[in-house]
Length: 427
Ligand SMILES: NC(=O)N[C@@H](CC(=O)O)C(=O)O
Ligand SMILES: [Zn+2]
Ligand SMILES: [Zn+2]
Image 1: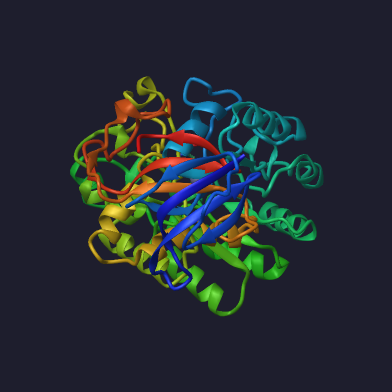
Image 2: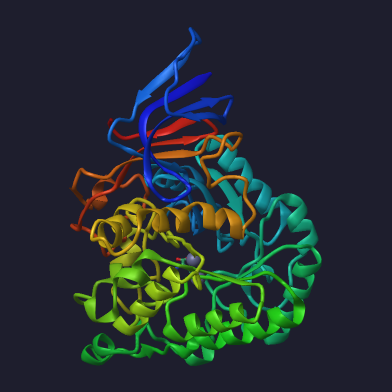
């Protein structure tokens, strides 16, 4: 089957938009040309006039909740939500029930993804059994089953010795360690960051050091073990500083940042609404600025959503009792496009890079580019049409977002994986 996407706006290597014809054949990008005539072959033709065509977005930090929490999300509903948000590859976290700490669960997630037939799903496996921090999982067996890295996301690995042992084994297997950085002894029951909101509402505040102390510790352990160390959802100025310094001296560290930590500060929290509760929490404006600067100078390599769906009942428990987490797939690109690109602060190519080529480079994936011979994973985006974020229209089971009602541009309208359209909005 041949698909021809006509008259699309495509970013060239210099970051300039060009009008191109893209041909997809057998799941591969077979041509990117100025003109293309279909020579009698059976082809599906899509007129992309006026729309932006980019490599499919890659999200290296998501929660699909299956197995065990299917009331929050499944591999299929999460996959559909991702496709609607323009994502073609997603990497899912192991904090399921059971935890993805055995080859069986890795294989189960892969099988669910195959059945869903939507986005490419890359599973992470846990560092410790049941993410309890007591005993390491069998890294070699988990790699063999298809895990792409090791992480106890949802909780920090509290023991430095445990983390060092994990890094040593991961390094010997040429696998990355991906860390949720949080020192529990510095958190003690906080649900928002230290700052004006916590003080005004009499809440215990989570301090910045609870994140950064793990970042610093793990950088030293990464230096000692030589592992590829990747920092999850960076949210503090101190973490950015430590990662920047580590990179300067050649330690193999990479890092990610979420849209909400680039856009929102704790002082923006409107009230005791758990749709504003996530881990790490929203920090100060100064931290937001440091994360933006880190993303621009390459200290923070990639953007991830940390898509973390929870049910309405769970979020209705209120700021202190509700679980941490917000959904992210269906708002990520429009949010960042509207806030940073449409306002002229960032080049479009920077945003696209941090969501496509950069994650592909960091995690050695064969996608993220529009090169001939690459998988035909593509996303078509309408940069002009403005629409409000309406959680009731989400494909995700989760409605937990602080961005409801935001007026945004840059909505994905069509998503292809291996040349097959897996999402079509309207065109
Ligand atoms: N980010 C969150 O607030 N929540 C995540 C866990 C995590 O990413 O640490 C979840 O699983 O709900
Ligand atoms: Zn986490
Ligand atoms: Zn997470």
